[in-house]
Image (cartoon, rainbow, N blue to C red; front, side):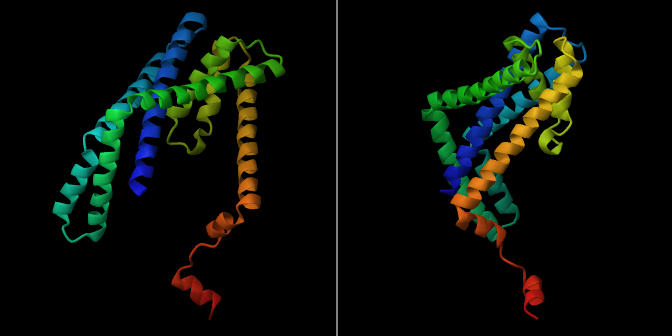
Length: 234
């Protein structure tokens, strides 16, 4: 159902955010221990972690306390004739029930989902290590973990930038300088990762086009507005 799908997205975002908090904290700990941690990076990391931590608390508490349903009820009292609000409140009741049941009964799955997201971040560090190896850079696995943490920190800090363009590259630049690697090499590593993103994006679109043509046609042949219809059929 719609409520179940939206509930799963909410849980996924909560666990993803929690895993990012854990990963950044671990990476900053490693950086303080084995790298030259810039003093200005400490308040930035603290601010991002605090923001993400508050986000996790807000998502988890709001999801399990029926906050969405309460907002819908308050809005319905303010606009009693809004039919779309009545429909929203019905979905809110169902979604709150789904989320409350999940957090009450599925604590192990919540932890498992968080660990899976954390594993994805660690795999990103292994990708950095392999890129550094093939480029002939002196990047250790610990250094790759630190670089991934700093890059993630920069990407989260630049969340308002589409695709974190510039912020993600800046994170690699700063991390390379911390690890004694030429900063330009850090930017090169990031650009190679961007190429990888474009490759998988193109591969996914090709798969969608050739194996699921009906979905592609539905996406490209959207319903036209009356004005467009008049233009096509004078």
